[in-house]
Length: 82
Image (cartoon, rainbow, N blue to C red; front, side):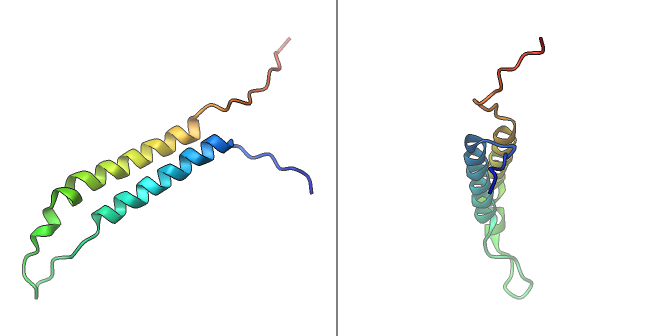
């Protein structure tokens, strides 16, 4: 089999993998009990973990994903336009 060339280097893929884990962690931080009409009001839906921490973790994951995609590769070709 011939060796295939991929667009992202190993470093880029590691950064993107960490970003995916951060995004998943942020969404897991948002989970919790829901408010139902039968059970009454659930004040946990306004906890600091769900309102402040989880969105910041998700945003950090999305920003890290952009960084992982745009991170320059060390294996640049040294061809010049001469």
